[in-house]
Image (cartoon, rainbow, N blue to C red):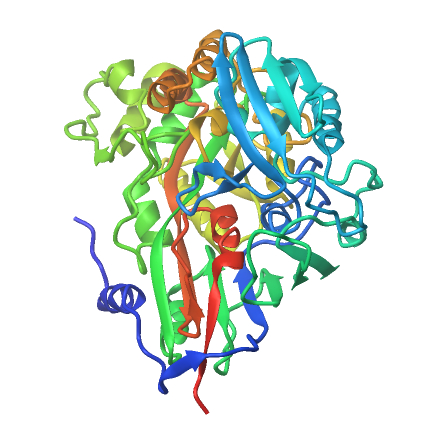
Length: 543
């Protein structure tokens, strides 16, 4: 049974309760500067560029037009504004009609145009990044006679069409990609980007944006900073790399509300198909089963959340629609030195069970060597475990390493600077396994890492087979999100049964805000969190 500390219970009670400020607040006619804290850093330049960070993608939503915005639950909803509507008008052949509002003007004075959409169509046709998948299926893109609409006809069904036309850039913007150029590009969103560094973005309300009046005229978003005292200023703090000390300190600050919940980020151990060690499926099976995920969760996040459970999928995370369910400890297999019988592959080849004793049996039976010798020459195996920077990622890697060491293996933790770099190291066999952190906005987007063409410059682990490719084709042809997700699970089963990856747990997040900010809603994605900013309003303390 899991054990929980009293401080965890206290923090959970605090963080789901709103506490009034010490003085009665009243509305202010001059809202102050809003400060927002998020994880990560600002790197890259556009949503279509290689290496653009999740943090930068999220704030570009405030300055660039999109056909759909991200709801706090992570699903896409019609954004309105410059792209007034995007409507599926036919499914045979699949046809989507985009209607624009030419009254919207870029910050350089140019009107928003169908040409801005056509520029993305041309760019997508030449890219092999995941965001461009739908653009490769376009048969024709025809502007309306008044050039206020664009009719797109697809050659094959593409169920994820709502993911297209996100974060549009001005068609004539320079193609150079560096952090300094981002603020210089024309903007067309609720905010203008005034300045940007790797850790700080300053945004001002866009006076030409026609939908609503932004309550906070200036927003400062800082990335990757530790918790900071606010002295009564309006602050919203969203973070996924925190500990009990952080929460205890933040909960002591007056006039705050907060919540802890589960994000759409999956921590997993992914194996290399090119490594001489983990290219063997029996070794991947043994290493997967040797991870006690309940113990890993308790050691990594168990001090401050009681609802994180071992992951049951590599494509979705706990709490998402269609998630297959919770995970139990393996119910009946125990270590037995007198037999080499193991569970059937249909049971062991699943995300749904952990069985450390099975790992010992698998090593002994399938490799024909003693525990602690996973190489063909019977020498003690050394598992190179890649990990990106981050307290949570390192803690997870250390917990996994302890489990493998208990089998007599030796594990060497190898620092890798980024998730893309880690996926490349896995693909090239520079590490045997890696603790990866994956965004799971929907099954289709996550499934693109395991199917179709290889993704150069994006997170792609190199694993492919016919069944995953067939699942991808079938799921993307299905406009029913429920049945489409179920079709993706055919690929999820392939990942589980071949032990390409062992999903560990969904990353918890902490959201706190001062009571002078109204309208803040929990969000299991960073994009859904930042997309709320224009709707937030301000209350200030009287006197």
